[in-house]
Length: 426
Image (cartoon, rainbow, N blue to C red; front, side, top):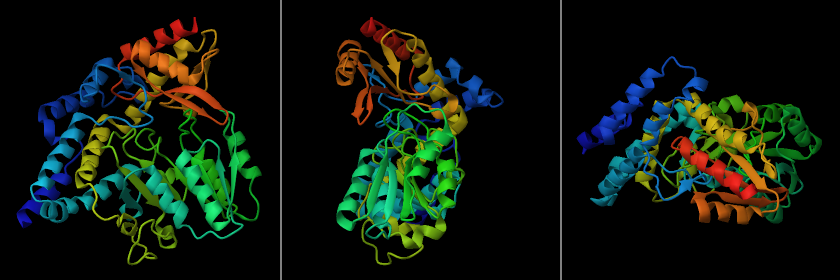
């Protein structure tokens, strides 16, 4: 048993390329391709189709549809799928032994890897199932009383808005929301909207890093700095930022952050992460029970009972794959893919983009609409006629189709989208 544990832990600690053990020949192929781009500027590397064709081969996406809804859930590369299947088979050979005595030992190496990627202390990272669970942990775990005010946006994620509204109904807090008219290409304009709603009763600002509806990148650091000057805490929803944008969590200066790892990190479906600034851990109650709920141990947020160990260990492979590509190289490639199609349809009569194409204000997600066609109908037409899978975003003052490519997206697929929009808008 000790030998099995040591072997497992040693494997979990392997480096970025070396950990891609499920397909060593393909790992070597990626390694050679990445070495060739080692001294290439990420903006230039984003244009290297030979390199990205190798990355595309790592995925097992269906040839029957063109998936442009990676903003919802991204597929995992084969190496991640293989890892989950391998550990699932291991678990089922003797669940209580292999899960609790073998695979459970891999959580701490995973925590270290996530912390290295996030640029923070491993004792600030909790592994959970998605951004909703992570952020609900903070939202329901804060000691807020009747009359305390929270500022959010009508463009935050629906589950987060619902959580704050439930706290307002249950505890009598005051939940205020801003309505933005995106795209906005002025950080101060955004910061000022939050500033205008602040009163002496304001305790929390909830901000979405990358707005899921239209892909607007929000100035989280500037909002955090403004809030902290007034003694206000900041919760950041980075479901669409972490694993896509090249940043470290401390860069944002927020106090709490939640993310889904099954989006742009391409980790297994049903994986997420919670980050809480070390000194604030004791003040947050766990979402689920813990025998020491006021402790400063981040693990108190992980007492969810039996969980999926195979999914957790699949995250390790996803991190290694992400690092093999390179965070900045990946960000610039996905931004290039978004601009590739968006710039081609932008001049078309009747076509409207709902997202900035400037570097600092968007990356993967872009909203598009065609005058005279309802967004739900447009999304249906794209799928029925062209096999292009998107999602209609209709809420508040947002009315568009969201298009989200990923690193496995081929230019010919984007060309199909462009031709489809040209035909439908003609």
